[in-house]
Amino acid sequence: MRLGLISPLATTTTALILSRSFAASRPGTRFLSPSLLFAFSSSNKMSTEATTPQDEYTPPTVWKPADEMGGTFGSINRPTAGSRTEKELPKGQHPLQLYSMGTPNGQKVTILLEELLAAGHSGAEYDAHYVDIFTGDQFTSGFVALNPNSKIPALLDATSDTNLFESGSILLYLSEKFENAFCPAAQRAQVLNWLFWQMGSAPYLGGGFGHFYAYAPYKMKYPIDRFTMETKRQLDVLEQHLKVSGNKYIVGDDFTIADMAIFPWYGQLVLGKSYKNAETFLNVAEDYPTLIRWAKDVDSRPAVQRGLLVNRKDYVQDRHCAADIDTVLAAEDEKKRKAEAEAEPSNKQSKL
Ligand SMILES: N[C@@H](CCC(=O)N[C@@H](CS)C(=O)NCC(=O)O)C(=O)O
Image (tube, rainbow, N blue to C red; front, side, top):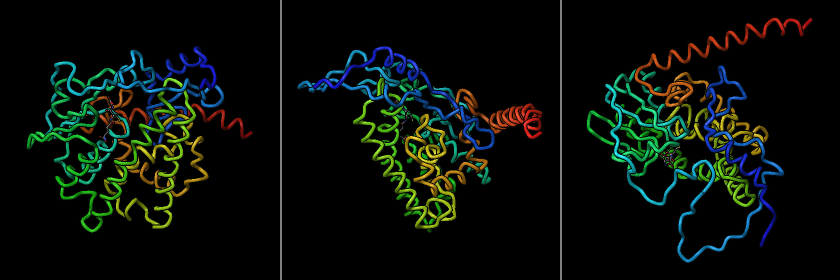
């Protein structure tokens, strides 16, 4: 059944905007410019033009990959695993070597590493090497040796030559390595419940909602409706849990690895630092006030602010020591100070 016509110009424009729009934002509340939204920004055009009808698809007996997939990840994905190029990974001097990008899954780990350092665990010093998933760094032989699944984040603990992949596994490993930091014994069961909830749920948010709302080559009503429904249901799970429990953080008054896993996805989404205009589309201000309160509390932690900057081209592409982040924070503070100073005369004038 033919439902309508695709506008080739609109589709091409949208695809172009999306294709490399890994736009960056200041992640923090301290000097976040609202126009600088988190990483995966989308086209502005979500309404009339956005619902591009499709030809109905009859699957062939045996599926074959399309010559041209379109969308942000179309040219990267293949139906096969394994390395595509021979290349060793860079190595720094610290025991922990992180290979990642500052996406929500990557940020979980850098938030934990910065929290560990802030809590005095000097053994958590790390080198964080930028992996460009848009140019295929995740398919090099060095990366695949650490993570056969070719996705960031991947970690090497050089003290025991242990490779780690899957962000949830990395969070748990690091917590256990440092005296169960951010996973107190009394709350362990609940921390793990919420950590695994996040690992199972976020693909519907990122791979489902985010993909069809922001990255697909054109907007399709059915998948956007389906994954918006599920994303809103998940946001409501968090809203109701926080509201009914009265917890400051996900499992109580302690900040845990469950918060660190959930915040980069659900926290940044409700703070408007995720897919462009998604916070409006999902009506977060009205529907999830308790979740927004929690997200602001997490976002205001200095170590979270530091972790959010790492492995991002526009901030701290590679991190080898604390000063790499300090320098960027100082530059951002200076920018903010200047902007405020410049705005001051006009503020005064408008008050006259
Ligand atoms: N379940 C994995 C998901 C990791 C993941 O999807 N990483 C994305 C970036 S957020 C990636 O590396 N994508 C590259 C690709 O799909 O080729 C985890 O939590 O570590």
